[in-house]
Image (cartoon, rainbow, N blue to C red; front, side, top):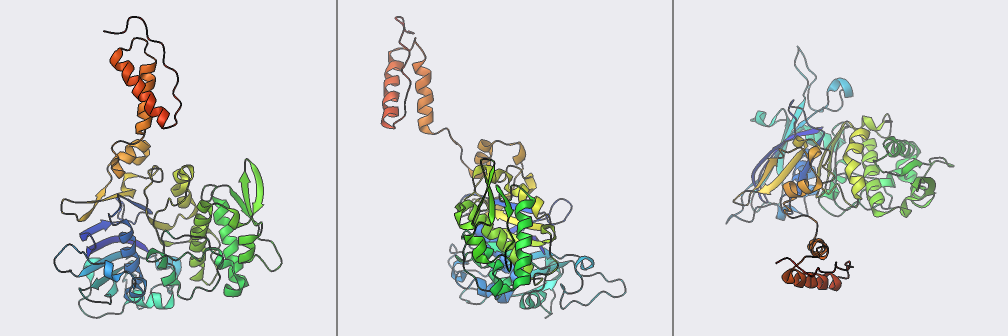
Length: 449
């Protein structure tokens, strides 16, 4: 499923907030990146989408530790929180009948369901989120009681309704143990510090040899299919008696890593935080999707379909990795929809304008969404810092300006007494900062008057 639209009322600083995730053709766009200063609701938006997609039962479990923070504290009395979202469903012709429980197959030319909507509410003083979902768009909410498709879907973990979310805790862990409630646990880290299962899906004791083997093979394709998804990892060794275990991947020389043009084999735990955290959530994404199919029938990363929410997508990534990361993910997972947040101009430098959403406050402090009108592909990093992050005076730093001014004056043999005095003061600042400054040119006998 893909998110099409989000409508939020009275959730923290979102008084009456709407955002479309569709492109000019009316179809859900594959990438939306949220940018803005802190306290502009970027993470809150990811949480709202996750709760709406989860349905009311799982929403209460996910938000149990954060419910009190949902209300807007500015009014004298809290107002009812409302989260509503509309999602697209995959065509039944592509996935069979199972993904659409509670909906009868079409008769006499009636169309199959292509959309599902969800609405959640939390009133002042209440401790339980209430809500429902229905087939159709947000404006076609049934008047009376109906079957709730999302409740059925999440209870039985139906495939092709896939939604996963990743918060900032993306540590690579060596803990094993079978995921008990996939639909909930794959969203948990957006709400509390919980590292992804990650490479734990290779644990044969928890998931069985067939599933673990399918996971390892699919992960290998993800890592080697696109050079910049996880750059410099050029192979994953899967041979071994009985297959490859979690401990093998973590502690044995199973990852082939390129250093200075030469291949070296090493365990995952030898890699840097950038590699470990990225490997952790991408491996988790692969494993979580396979869970919906019990490890059978998914052999190509391009088969993964659904919605992925990622907070701080640039976390721990070097700038040259950031610049290529979205392109690499798009090529590796062309049928996934990503909604992500970032503070990095490099990460969005190859996006189209409609894929970038700028979140800010209006004059009353309510969060609003502004579509980015300039084209990031044609902008410098300085332009992006200024337009998207509000940094009016990006580097050079103050010391760089001092050194530049010093060099300008030092090279002028005709500098006057005032300029020569300024030169000495600038030299003193540079010396204090431990910055070497070249010796000035000797003044001429006739300085400028």
